[in-house]
Length: 391
Image 1 (cartoon, rainbow, N blue to C red):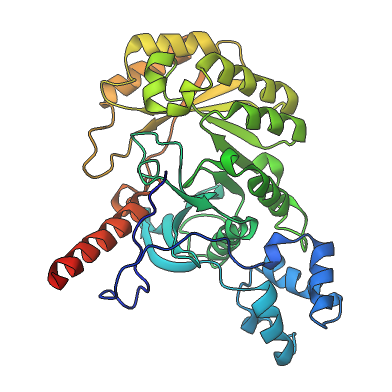
Image 2 (image 1 turned 60 degrees about the horizontal axis):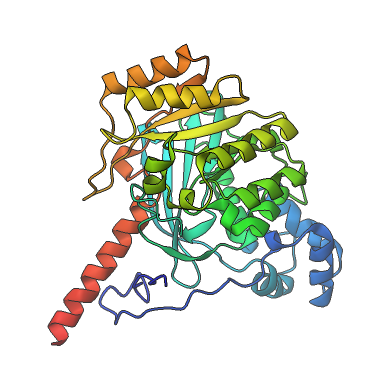
């Protein structure tokens, strides 16, 4: 059973009595609905059907999330529409920036107190949003801050989409230094296992890629969905016939080690996971991104590089090596640079395209789940102190 974290009742009441909250899905939001359902919703509220397009144009086309800024709507209509179609889903708890403003991370509190994170990363030619699909994660990977929190709940379609719309608005404001003002890519690599929230993640992808005003108008080819290897969901994704990139968090080429690093491997072994990934590549024509966090003295041995090269040689795949961003108190650490270079050399010698991920955001707890873990630790410490005083 997953033990839910203790959450403060209100960020403005640090000394409030701590309580355990039951996770619950948020109220309905515009982004949960397609355009036809939005028309039906506004007419049910006694508004003309064209209000659906007005709202959608503001939200998806102009990246306006506050209905008070939608001044072409009558004031009387705004109150009704706010409650039923534009409720607040995400409340910022912390917003941090580094890399001279090119990397920006936000910690959000959801309506039920759950915490999630999203990151905006600017480059000279693009801006990428990394978003969460779950509050916490149930995959229990021991080197991952989110995995150690356990799963609180799945996010709704709109909670996922609203992260992207907010980050697209930040990019459009020019706040991301040295980057274009338009969000161009979205990666589902934040908190959670996306394919464990399959229906909502797929609906969010369709909303993000639908043309405005129904959606955000992003290219499917600029969307990446990650997974630790939930084979049935991977097979289901093949049947969707999408053109999104699939990223497989492999982290070890052999079952003995992957059983430890990625516990779901005890159910679906490396060979079965790779077969599903290669079948997705064959259907979509998109090469698979093999995510591999290099961990000192754990999975960075030369023979593991050779084995990974053997498994991927001739396949439509590339390896994305990730220098581990250690979490406080963790026994896991990043591989030394000479070891990293040797790993890269062996993979490339095997004919496997390999890149090393840019290390962003270390000074702002950039690894997935670190800000949330810090907030939960502070909340737990506060709760323990309160209990001690009460005794």
